[in-house]
Length: 202
Image (cartoon, rainbow, N blue to C red; front, side):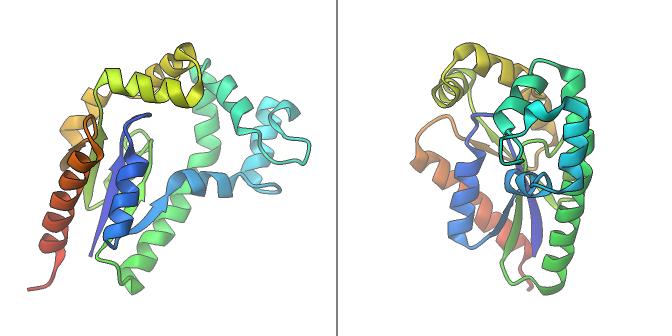
């Protein structure tokens, strides 16, 4: 039983890889969903965010307007750092508890923690292995632009992240998601088989 940290820059397709791993039998925790949970209405983290950035970041129903927050932080590195300092400690607590529960009672062959900021927040130090989903810059820009609707916004988000090249030396396994889904699936299956075999009892 191993804990796998799965990461990749925006547009890399790490969620696609996480879905493939889930289909193979992994227990997958998406830290994006955890992040939504820790800033739900009434949480301490949401109160901190509102105090820092004003009620402009709230929807009429009192929930966090994630799009508005993104507009603020992706043009202001200091604001992004401030936001992360409010949210990531709570995310880390949830992840630590999930890992503890898995080590004690888990039945899945692998626990996969999917996190875009795995390395930046130091979460990778908690993992048995770090898997990095990579993509070439042309495909990355096309995917992010298609999702966000603006090449300017896509470039802003891409440039706000730690470069992919800096993450590669830290990864135990690389999954290149630049080509077809079948090619990616083959790599995922190979990584799965190696990881499960490594962690299986003799």
